[in-house]
Length: 276
Length: 84
Image 1: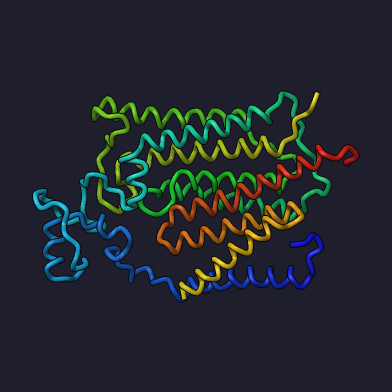
Image 2: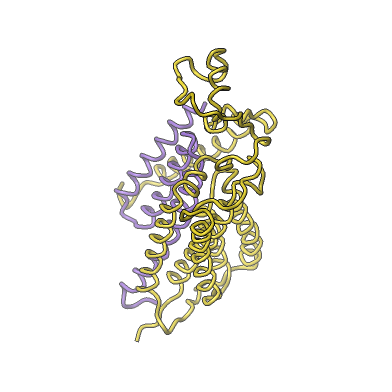
């Protein structure tokens, strides 16, 4: 594409992009099933929700839920049928399969992932963080609408980020996207206010405490259940908010850590460092 | 319907990638990279990976685009001597 792109090409491309977004928006009304018509057994978690082998074998004979070709892996382990919203005291208890693997069965990998993000943020801070700092003046001061609008939007975005990481074991999402959503809310505050600066010490303390909380939860598992990052809380009823043991606790820790880390990175990027 | 929409999304991704590579303006490249991330997150959603879709939309399309733009502004500020 040349530097002097014709206006026509630009407009056609813009109309194409906007058209795709509009189609996607209205597809929600035609393609999504209504809330009470959703059959949980037909979603991607079907094989997870129905871990019962005997029940599955019966259904295999009847040919109702499973394909004819599917053979149960084990016949010797007695499982009880698992139904959404009724079964309790399961091994893991998270309704979201991805979360149960990421946080519970492979929790140590996630600790490493958090460490990688921490190191990346530390690198950014090391390069960009100076002693003397001056907050850049915007050439055009943000208008009143921008000021009020970003503050209202920040409240909603913040709440949504917290929702995403608290409900990580029930719905898609979790600590990392929740923290990123919170950080984008902070970015909005930067755009809407003249000379906004978050509480730097607060961010640091928050991040360190939540990072420590993850390891402390792991050590409690080591002491109580004889394995690092073992689930030491009762798993409750599948589908409840208070279920799946420590997954919600760990995701709250990860969400706070990622949120404060990415906010600090954004702060370091925006705020100018005065050169000597 | 979903197949049609996915096809449109793939066309959007390819077009955004071409703009990102061949555009002379850096700003257009960064914005179209965000567009590519948006399309990819839509595809992830249709491929039944909503977790990855949410992460891609929040980090790829949201934060990294903003950080690229901030970094670009800083580079331009440091690069020219007679800036205001």
